[in-house]
Image 1: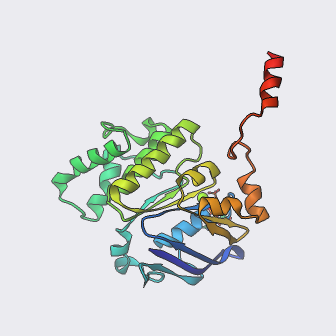
Image 2: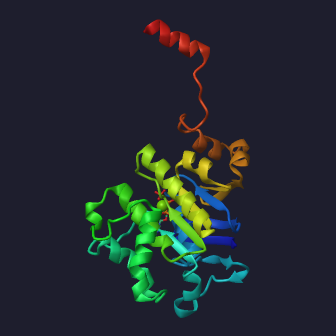
Length: 260
Ligand SMILES: Nc1ncnc2c1ncn2[C@@H]1O[C@H](COP(=O)(O)OP(=O)(O)OP(=O)(O)O)[C@@H](O)[C@H]1O
Ligand SMILES: [Mg+2]
């Protein structure tokens, strides 16, 4: 559905990445995984055209959209839903107005239909009835869920999530991941998730792309990526022991009982 071909980007003299290739299959969940500061958010912004590459091409269903901007880009932008890393809600607007904004701006539906569409999206993220609340009145997890609803209200074909679970507790993380999977199924969309949360990546992904040190170090299914001996990747995957299956051994149990 989306193909990035030899994408390079630098800011000033600082190279973020060089000659990145990535194919995002229609209907799949692709996870872009990698350490902080390696350019995951920058890469995501190239897909939707918020940033332009210094070199390389971006294709959407075979069509080169790299250089499209303004009016020419609009029809393509409607196909994307983007969930920003920091939720990026408008602080001075209610939840209702945050969700209605995109529909109104893009004249995507009749004004009279908006309340029902806002209610439908809030139901999808299990936050029914909070239309009149302001973002500051919501917890971080709720703000993320409103961010999800704001992206899905446009019925996008492709939904891109930038760090949807970073900074959330494990239960809220599981909840958000479930909502992402639900929205994908209900909208029959293609999903791209940027994260440095290995556990979520392994659970959610059909395909994982591991970005580090300015290059695409590994791409494959979760099983293929886990079996890939590339040291940078293995160090990252195993930096936290809680991700790998760890079962207490008989010795562990005996030791615990002896200490009781
Ligand atoms: N608009 C910009 N102007 C200049 N430099 C930028 C800009 N956006 C990103 N960068 C730089 O590009 C690099 C990659 O940033 P990016 O935000 O993509 O990292 P990331 O992998 O998403 O990190 P994190 O996991 O912390 O979100 C960083 O060094 C950042 O400072
Ligand atoms: Mg980022």
